[in-house]
Length: 362
Ligand code: ATP
Image (cartoon, rainbow, N blue to C red; front, side):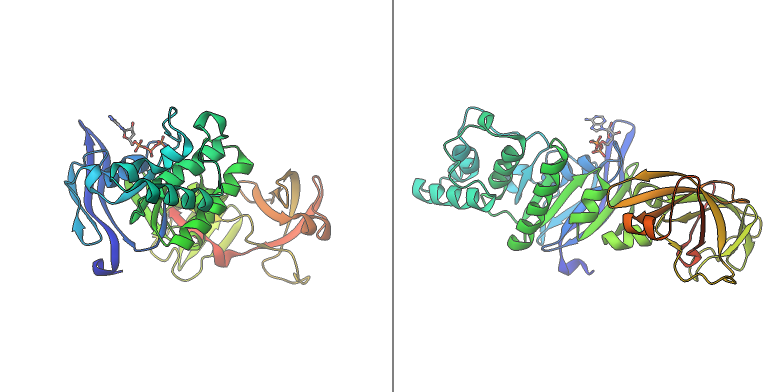
């Protein structure tokens, strides 16, 4: 993406808390209308980065440009964004309508105009007619909808969401994230959401920025992040994965216990013979169907246990000659079809075309 087409551009953004580097040189471009998630473990710097974009935290170095305007030194009030925090942060003594209309009243908009806009926003977030209530009379999910309406009141160019769903219970969280995504699409507002929940990021984001210890590990679509992790950290952090110790044998071949596998082109060509590596393979990257009696990659394993996950199951399979058990994923119907049972045998092949290789020592 060229900088010209970017709505928000961060260049060399860094943050020190005394001697501690919370953010290293962050370079990032976000096009207009995109829904981006900052994803990473606790302490990786994602909230600090969001707060710097909002002007709520001063950065130590670097430049921020929003819609062609250098906002690096602007106070929050002069930036163009709405923000939703994890803790709702509604004014408890103000009605829902007054909470939502707060920014509009501050901008001295006429009362009738504010009332109409508040009604429109409450309908938009699925709370029509709730204006007279007070925050304490609402559930967590409803309060977060009010916070969202308030953030959108001034039609900001940028919507910032700091773990907005993490205080909610699982069912409300999933429903609200779907609604949030639909609303964002409808409004087309450029959105950044901070989350440590990989499933949430995978389900809502156009692109995910995976962060680790103050730097960006990878920026990509959810599918790219899942299928083509750029580092062992990303492969470990996003989704379940089998991690197998192996040694490079050259020409993309790797020995893992008694097994030898060749990685797909583009993977593992640079490792010198004898280099210890980790091979990564997703639990769904296995074949059971259509393995003829002479299939060269077929192997026989023993199912140790089965973890029930709803529509899917994870079977722990011990393969003689492999240094660690494998986690293989099957749908509930496949469990019946292939007769995957704890204590039973399983004939399968691994999708070695899906292997990823990362150095054993980073
Ligand atoms: P979490 O999901 O737990 O909120 P995070 O990825 O959002 O984590 P940040 O809150 O951005 O992480 O913090 C990044 C790092 O900066 C952490 O190590 C944190 O301890 C440190 N940090 C954040 N704020 C301050 C501060 N005001 N003073 C000193 N260190 C800070």
